[in-house]
Image (cartoon, rainbow over the protein chains, first blue to last red):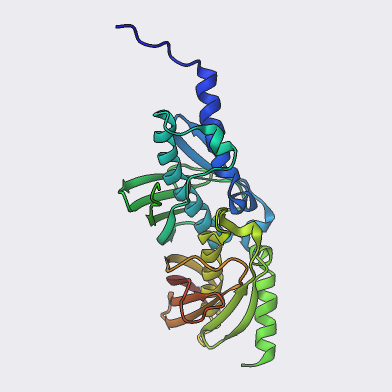
Length: 168
Length: 139
């Protein structure tokens, strides 16, 4: 049986990157902190570009613990939203043009968020990845980890629960 | 509570670049308790559909307030850093309203300060979020 020709690679990339951009750019707080997302297939890495306004201890200096928590929460929420968007986008159920036009899926609501501070956040760029440990119909459990120079030495990690928006 | 103490704490908080970026202000401080207010700011919106402030900004307020409460404890720690922080979100803060956090440092050992905090908007009956945290204590 003849299979349909695969989509041109550029078209696929363009669609996925446009969806990711639409999701990230819709949230003012993500822009305020200066967080961007890099994509490899469906895997996302959040990048927090260093800025002096992120400092919490000017004497060390160190990134504010709240910024670290926020960075992990942003990464966790995006991982959850992205997983849902990805599935719908790849199945053809979701039109990326609608996302770009501002018709975005509803944001998951944080129920609780626990962050462990493992090391001082240094005044330089930070990176984070999150994994959805469980995505149920109503609740989701997500873990996130942030590092700076050395991937094997995270400076913070977090566990969070979210209320998943209903698609209606 | 002495006005001097609030003034010193206010300067201390304003010396924190990120607290300044969020326009945080010390309302009250002393004896292991702190109250800090963060005005509503559209740049902090986490849900564009509703205009509700991002949980991350609430975490930052809780963390700053918890640290301030620990620093103001009668044992007078000279430095403090967050070890862990757990935040429970009861509801989204009402858009347009300031969020005020109140933190109590209820126990301090030689190495650790234990803190509880609650955040409210204009509705003082229903908290927006609660938090518990452990902070390091340096002497």
